[in-house]
Image 1 (tube, rainbow, N blue to C red):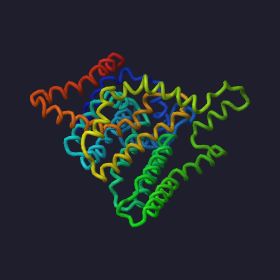
Image 2: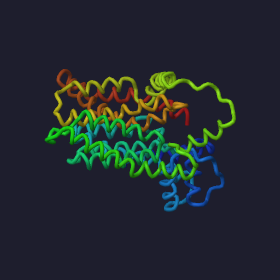
Image 3: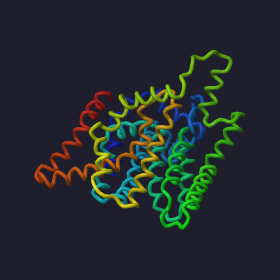
Image 4: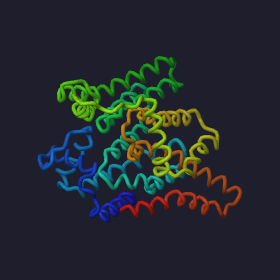
Length: 361
């Protein structure tokens, strides 16, 4: 509730500075087309799930950009619920509280919640995958994961790459309780594929009927039509594009999304204490899910910090647990300074970014 209040207050305070022809407006226009109030009809470049959600909100609360911004921010705030529950189950209650606090404080997440972005819905869907890992039957678990990945695909075109990470997790982390590890893997992969095809397969068929060719995204069809009959500039090879995008993310976007000294807390969370087999399995699944983002680097034409918002919440459980371990380590050496030093570490990672964010708005 505090996070919702902070975001709502910031949205109301900055609404006068909203850019009327930004990327956010494209989602508003698409939503208005769904309810028949659109005055502008731009090319359909994005997947439909987020505009459908906005259209439903418009029907309930009225058609306005302010309503769309509040809805987008609220969707992002919901990410904290599965994050809190998963972190409490895998780590402990104090780590879960630290994750919830970080989620509502990180400038990268707060700034993204101020706009109407599909990455907020994609981030919510991805974090909803985490509690699914506690389901006892791997086939059911895989099916639910596949359905969610399909919904991510209906939100952003790179959604299927996260299915790759989950498939790898199913392969390298068999169920110890299963009498046949290969059978357990096969059931998980079959469930994952079936769940994804149930949602993503139907969407592919829809795109085939709408555009007359097999494509994976409306943006792909528009780009092919623009380039048809014209000479295009040489396209960089996939390895070159991946390295270029990785450099941009590493040097420009990652320090903004998550302060560099927070990254040190992630390996500290891994190696600061012994881990049970269940925790190693859950963390390995989370790591492969987050690392799937790397598969988007070769096919991303214009990298943007907003794309990191999809996976940023997946990193917070390790950062939160790292802060708890840091406090425990300092508590054995300087008990009176433990909390002040931890608070200083948190504030050092967010205050400078908030100053820049306030200057930009």
